[in-house]
Length: 457
Ligand SMILES: Cc1cc2nc3c(=O)[nH]c(=O)nc-3n(C[C@H](O)[C@H](O)[C@H](O)COP(=O)(O)OP(=O)(O)OC[C@H]3O[C@@H](n4cnc5c(N)ncnc54)[C@H](O)[C@@H]3O)c2cc1C
Image 1 (cartoon, rainbow, N blue to C red):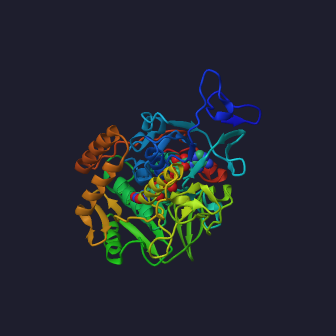
Image 2 (image 1 turned 45 degrees about the vertical axis):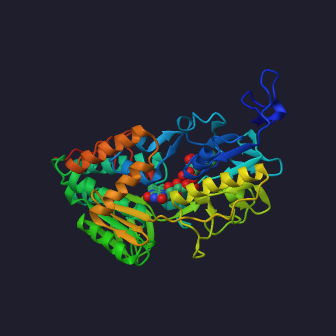
Image 3 (image 1 turned 90 degrees about the vertical axis):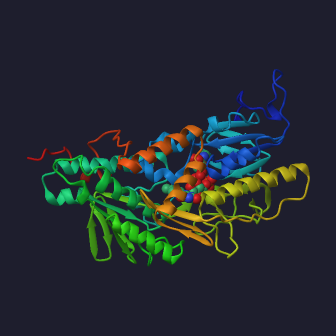
């Protein structure tokens, strides 16, 4: 690694070999992003004769599929996130850097991290996606997305604080607004969030308040398209919608959102008054493609070669949620963890083949083992090709697979115990509100208007 003036002591590149440390001449593979794609690539390169540097702006690998459980007080943040250093500590050829990448100098083969430069021989970019508001970035403030642990704990605080505020609120109209939760986006994340909020309010918290009845909370799931879970078979998606309705979730389809602010959501001519709107509708790529001058699609995903390398830059690979790779049907592969993981393994294999001078592996082919979505405590749908499951059978399979794919034995045991406990008791153990309680997110004037909390008479 180097700054504009000198290389710091952590650098082991041949250019800055020090007398007390032999130069490391092994090919240097830099991986940006320790998510599903980047981490899989790093692990695949673990025993190889290369030097690996894994760079991430977070110190943890995040198991995003269970973020909604943190957001709804089912699990604690540490149960779905594992320090990256801990994961690769046995890989002696791998170094971890906590830094934000801001660009790539492709001509000099350097990763740019502010004023630091990190040389590479091969580069893997797997920086994932971010929430997209379809050109209405102003909605983000009133309707945050769900991508990071901070997002999840922010949602958890908002949901729990709204209930606390409703308990103190004398005005019935404002109380109803505080007890209305709107989730935008009828894909798996929206369905999971809506189901989990319904279970939290209608079941887990139903006996904990004295002035309000959390079971009266209104949960509305809004989908602009004609039906929920458009990536699933129609029959399975219908079963998921029926499960949600049984949990008390109102489903609104075919109505795109017209506006979102601190007072609620506008849908066509209708307005839903709510103090808690959650965005689960759109994603766009992080700028990995733009960093290296790779053509991108409308969502910013890099249009990579069939082997995942960047056109004209065979030493750079882009994968996961920030790559546009056509599947067998010609449509881009979905943003799913198994896609990113298989691509991470493929990019690592391509790099090792190039170093060995052997024929490059075949173009990347995705092996689809199925898709799943959960709707609540004991209901999920699973589309495994010829086998389709729903209800309790789907949920059992969903639970087993998510525990299996979690990183770390401790997390697997802790999550299993928590799930068993909440299955038997409906309890949610992670109902903590941290941070300031006075100013909810939203425009400052709206926050001021709601402060201080008034005691109900
Ligand atoms: C709420 C939610 C639920 C999901 N549920 C499922 C599910 O049930 N099943 C499923 O298969 N998939 C699910 N997904 C999708 C799945 O998580 C993604 O497809 C997968 O994480 C993509 O892997 P990736 O490696 O491309 O990116 P990520 O796993 O997102 O990793 C990107 C990494 O890059 C790092 N990074 C980003 N920018 C920079 C930078 N500038 N500098 C340094 N580091 C950077 C990030 O910190 C992160 O660690 C879900 C996603 C979300 C958000």
